[in-house]
Length: 89
Image (tube, rainbow, N blue to C red; front, side):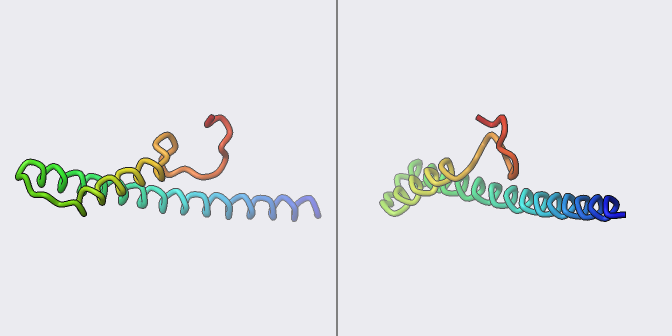
């Protein structure tokens, strides 16, 4: 009887962990997509200003800051993933 209860508790715990992990992956994928969209938009604005010779020091600073942060914060090898990090090194 106690084995049955512990199995049910383990199964419930496992299911709860799977739901949390799946939800976090979804949030990560949305966030990474947002970061990519912002990086593409700022790059497009930078290219536009360069082509039409529109000087903008603020845009230049924003471009380097946003693109640098995109590459620093985005894990391109494990999109949307959390959980075990075994074998990722």
